[in-house]
Image (cartoon, rainbow, N blue to C red):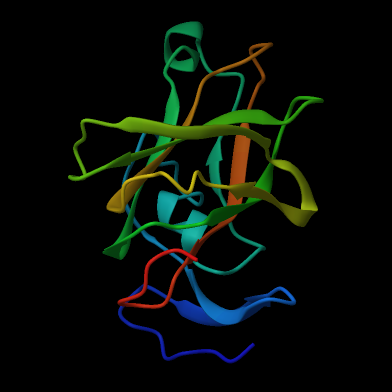
Length: 174
């Protein structure tokens, strides 16, 4: 895969995906973080999208229960309106089944949010969780990853990378 030049803090890469009937190039878009539920020293939200698997956005467990009841979320900006076909998330959660992640879209970074899908992710740092997004989804520029606290008080999330698979600029989904 060839790398396109970085634009600001956004890194866009080219990847090839095809079948016997068709072959086209999709853009792998690393979004920009616009907001987050937590911002800890050394684990800032921007680390979830910096392309470095050794850094992460961390929401630790073991906090007081009133803080643990807060849901965890990242608001992401793709830099342009598009209808992604998939989402790749690399990370770990301190549960056996991974974290339940809701993927939402909106026309503005403040919502209102509309649910696209949910997935079980953050199971391993060996491979990202890959989630197909509904083909019927309305194109948007803003997306939110929304995770509810599950299980015990030490439940934590560490997101190391987030990448959206988008059609090339000016093209619809195939």
